[in-house]
Image (cartoon, rainbow, N blue to C red; front, side):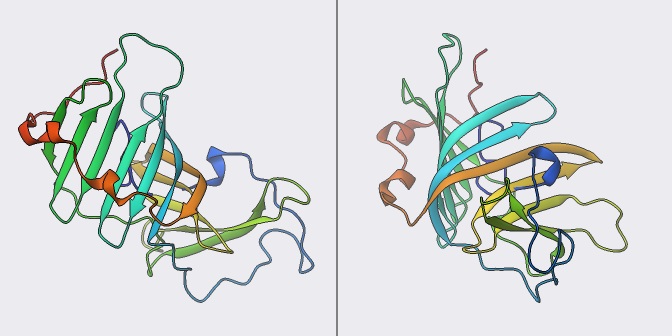
Length: 221
């Protein structure tokens, strides 16, 4: 999963090659001198924020506002409108993994599609069996945003299929990158995160979904 935007999210954050990271010196030395943690931190179960998902095969960025409810296995994605493209459609996506369905709602007309979810719930967190990769500060001197980088790399497999970067302080997602067949498929960056769900009603499909079509709508141009 982890690709809940226009290409299909949330959620969940990160690899150093996708953004410029400057590692600030610490009292114990420079990057790479950290002692590996015993186990990954525990990510928040509920948060709201914004994301940018980059689809490497198309070169397209999709910006969205996201409500993430790991406790009830549901995600709501509201695409952000950037600029004015008359032929482009913007959608709201409601992923209900407990019911194994996804609702796609066109923001202007409220036309609705109801699509079965075939992939299992994949939370925005660091799996217990993840491999610790690195720890560093994002930005330059004085920024002090410390993060840990984890992956699903195993000794028997050369390349990672998932890399995630999470903040050390509160274990918020920063970026996640997924690869498939040795090529990068999606990278998602997370920002402006806030704990909790301000309006649980965002996970309730609108009335137009009572007569939802069974096929997914396209993006227009």
